[in-house]
Amino acid sequence: MAKLPEMTKHRGFPSGMPGTGYQFTIRRANPKGVTPIKALPRRARKGSPEYMVDAAFLHALWHHFGDEPFERGNLDAGRLNYLFGREVVAADPDFDPTSYEAMLRIDEAVGRSTMPEAFEDVMEI
Image 1: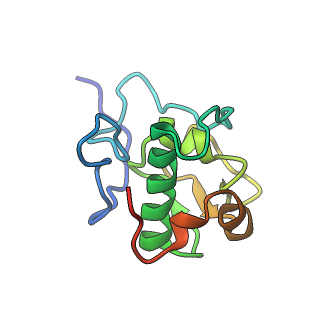
Image 2: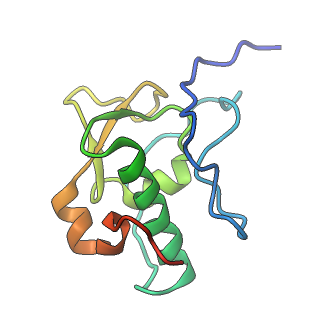
């Protein structure tokens, strides 16, 4: 069996959105290679279930990491891709989209303008 790449597991970070099939983290590194982080267009309209999942993910990121840079680690690439390039950005100029060690940060100004509910102490779903 091939050795999987090292991957930080963010202890205490929610694994997904309760009551749905949407995940926020992965359990183990991908044996076929690291899924790249890339900006995907967000088609979800404000108030739709998909929008609420994205906002809940940003809420979890904000309340876990705040304005500090954070390692990608076991955060789900699919969820990150819907926020990347907008609410979540690369934290350093030599960002590697295919690394579990890539550093990210929340662009608070963008996040507060696009998903203000994600920055509340409690987010109603």
